[in-house]
Image (tube, rainbow, N blue to C red; front, top):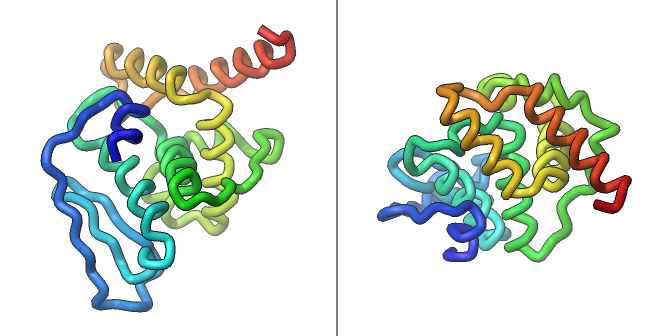
Length: 172
């Protein structure tokens, strides 16, 4: 999906995509790892969206770069935006007013996966991703990467969101 590569500003090398239909009860539509993307039985009903979701993850991590500093909740939010765009469905309406923004940004990958309300947390990630947009997120990730940080600081995201809100209110 060249359109996704263009949006994320990266071009990836060879990608392996496997289809694993061995477990119809698998709850995930797909998974992404360094060896490529695996699509599961659940992906069949939503194939373009699931593939776009997993490709977003792949593009963010195919090489060690600035996107690797993105907090998991924003990464999942971006992947869900891709899912909805390519499955021709609307993303869930999410308002940052409903989110504990600092709390969700601090979640580790493991905490995110075990969160009791992962849909709500992901909706916060979607709202953050949409409010900041790819260009602003790219800038923040590059800055964090250049500063040698493992993860984009929560304060930077909060400042960027406040700035985006102020610009929106002022019509700038």
